[in-house]
Length: 135
Image (cartoon, rainbow, N blue to C red; front, side, top):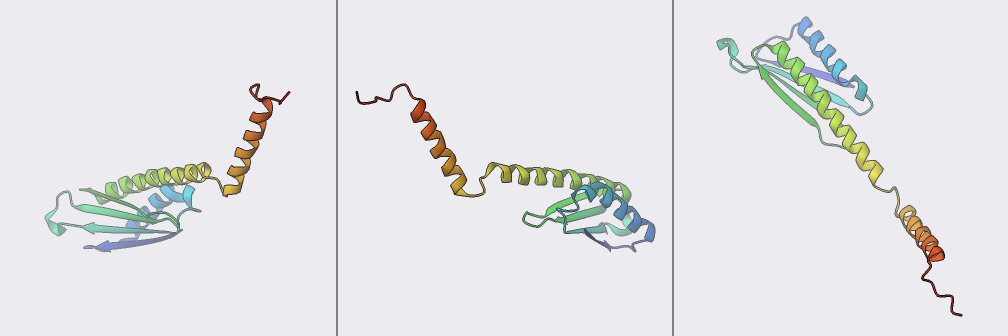
């Protein structure tokens, strides 16, 4: 899993980078085989004016599925990172579960389904008491 971190409007300190990487690994390491790339964009929307303006945007690239996009805005950037990472992990878990469920519901080839239907028809006709033997 590749992790890309970008800061807009402020410098990305080593401590902040370490915090982001730690939270992303904690939230997404279980899905390492499903995740190709994670992009994190940190921004300060209002600059020095303050307020609830620290945004963390996370984009998780999943092969064969739509990207998971999560954004969180908080007054504290660390809280925004924590909340967004947690939500990204939960959203990815739902997406992976849906993919697994979809794969199990669909037959791999049409022949397996047709063979099962033909076998069911044969067993039903042999055991049916309504079949007239012609005597």
